[in-house]
Image (cartoon, rainbow, N blue to C red):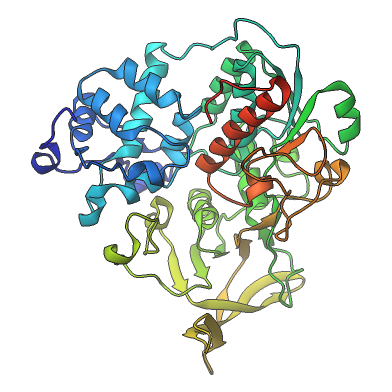
Length: 483
């Protein structure tokens, strides 16, 4: 490395946030970039650790020590080239990835990992500012046409790689805008949508065709597409939300988190209420909000509710509260289970752990409260954790709006999955392995959350890239695309 003693001499310094009071007044991103010289200093902390465990933590196989070293040496253009050789969309992962690479960093043994996510984000942001990211057109075409169904990170990565290999991909998106989960699932304050638009323009210049507002399996069958295209790639998301099966679920005011988040993202995009909320407005303004689910989607609901002016926000998690610090000897370099507080949670909410919802209470057809009970998690005879309700622990929470953020059970079966007639795995995802990404139906491939289940943006990018190579190999007999 450029500065072998950097980790001993330089303290960890990461990006900062705007103050809560100011950032709650806007839907814009609120992360403040580091000054460029400081990014170089932080890159100098990357130690000559011998085995870069950060590689294990990064699903897209970023060459992290290499681009850290290049940034330290002020070779930003070369650092960008290195980063883009493994990751199609660093500006997305640099904003919304939880950074498993930092959890795997050797310096995380004492809780001071290299600020890998920040360095990655600032490399690509500078690349766009300097004009270093032009379209990469293939010098010649292959004559092969591929239909990519789904324009989330998996579909976009797959389509871009295929275009760069000389094929002619068309991306079909059922929503009115391109981006999938990136567009409508992630709030603008975490990732502004002009970032997607910029990449779409680049991909169009590279030869990718986009068709929004077109649902495969509804507007056209999969078999009809296969008549016109050599290959079809299923790259949709895991969109079937897990429901809350309790009495009172049907009350007005109980909604899926994604319906709530999508409405706000559409408003931010300039859509009127008739378009953003065709089935009725879901708003947290002046309401007592309860978010059920302790993951990223629940956190996004909290940040959105705070910006809409909620009277109060309570987040319920069925799992017990994790430890504030993990046991490094047991977990490192793997992703640890520990208590994390998101920027949205810092903005204001009450968090309650080991709580189950028993029923929704309402008046005149509208929810007014949730009846809950506390849980004990105990080890059973076989060593597995078992849940039991704590006797006499029932309590009520005032609730005008309940948002269900309990994860997803898999892809929607109606539409492209049903029309394609592909086999599903025991979890309800499209069955395909990671060697060739082929489904049970000839010339149909699958990648991303539709194949692996709900996951991270960075995993979707990885699968899209690998699937593109598999498609290229199937069509041409060999592939020069990276895996």
